[in-house]
Image 1 (cartoon, rainbow, N blue to C red):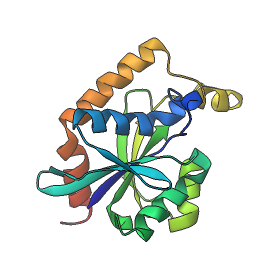
Image 2: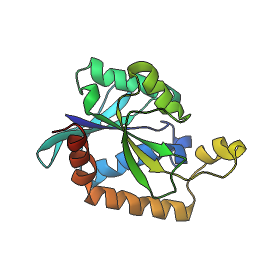
Image 3: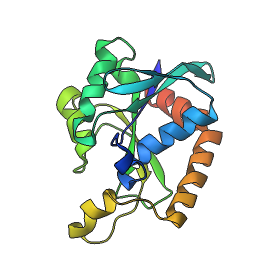
Image 4: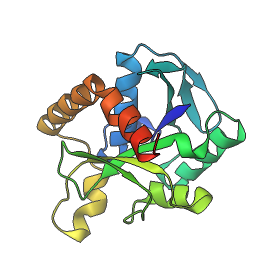
Length: 182
């Protein structure tokens, strides 16, 4: 079963942070698809749904970003998903706001959530990178990532989420299956 694993920090304080772009997208999709969530130790998991005949589910991380790997291990341990069927959704500094890219494997580019996941399962997993833009200066990265989306950015993000929702099977199922050689 294909699992969209959405990264973010779990507290209300961090709810609208740029670092929570993956979690915000997951919550958006759960609402749009009218899915129900069941609570587990490190995440909430949706009921399954079909995309072009592919069974899918959404997992919303409830771990802090630096501990994201624990949730991935919980999915595996509870036999809720195979590691090669997980796509991690997360914020990406190196993409402009409103851009997305899917990538398999590779490094973590300093992203603490990916670093945590890679420390638990290695680097060979799928990633949906959600652009949040770079502040331009390295010293401003932490404040930028942990800062909230402003009103204009939030509007742009919602438009991006709508486009993703309208193209779910092309983004996740088709891309995922074609890269697996299926």
